[in-house]
Length: 97
Image (cartoon, rainbow, N blue to C red):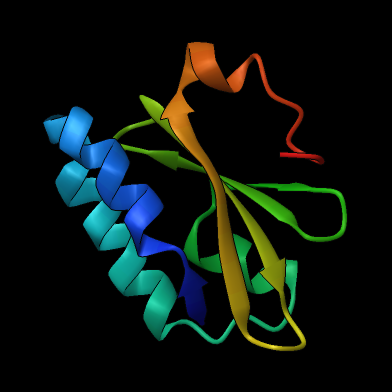
């Protein structure tokens, strides 16, 4: 997958150092992935949640943080839409963020 944008992840881990390695790991795994449909993500990340037709919520660092990604399966693109704590996640609409 081609991932947009790593800088969003980096800005977050610069403020929350404890999540740097888990986000780097997710980025490296997602970059190598060739997800063509949501089921393929769930095979790799059984605790991920599919939201709507193109959004995926990943639990990061033992479910301490949430990462929302919009996926274009047909183009092999992943767009980081949100990364934050559970409290921050509870305030967003995953379909519009």
